[in-house]
Image (cartoon, rainbow, N blue to C red; front, side, top):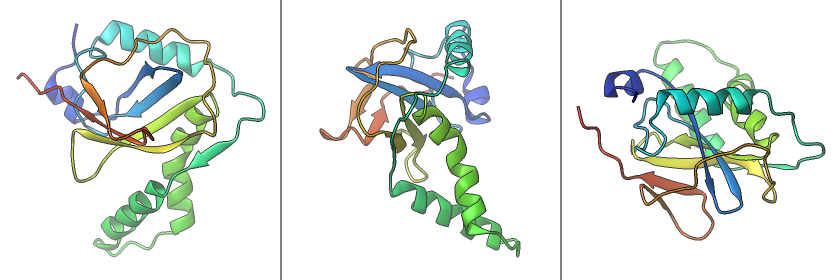
Length: 160
């Protein structure tokens, strides 16, 4: 069974795949899931398997500058409603899930604010780490931007 477009657009669904020696975590943030991961049962099984993985001892996590862009966007959004916010607390709150995934060995991506098909690296281990988890290998539905693999596009279109 596949997730409907309505469900995808109203949820932040964690999904996973492998790109060569890199294990990838993606937070959909209401974006479309590629067809190769849009399987409710398989995805729930992967989510459960990842949730019980231990953190990797002494993993060094690199945090990208994208965190600053997302934090600033969040600050501007809450300030529109005259709400005071602690920027550091907002940053740490945003980062928590991504860092948790990086500590398990995943390169962790979030959907871009300006392009619903684009995902940007938030953080990941300094060097690729083998994760004890069976994940589907990347398909041609994913197109990485350049050699750095710090961003990619999902080519799947909604069909509903």
